[in-house]
Length: 68
Image 1: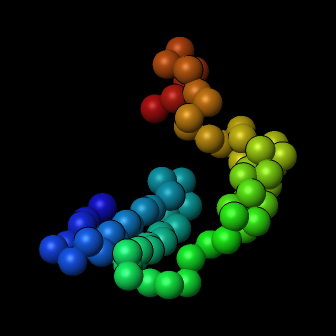
Image 2: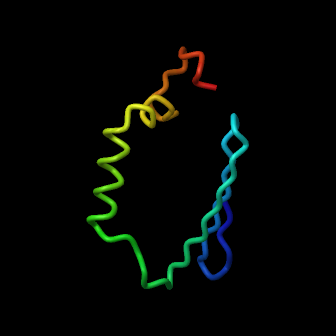
Image 3: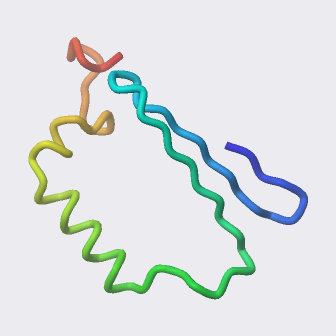
């Protein structure tokens, strides 16, 4: 993650197993942002998707072999 002098945030990520890569830049001056409805829809999807929840590292416990 990088933040430049203009406040632009750039995040790069790579999924360890598949090697899939993604990046995003967030410019604080952009007018087009996600609406409250979009955010709530995404949250509802993540909470209802069992596969996503199973892969989430936030729910893992240190004694879980998949924690690392």
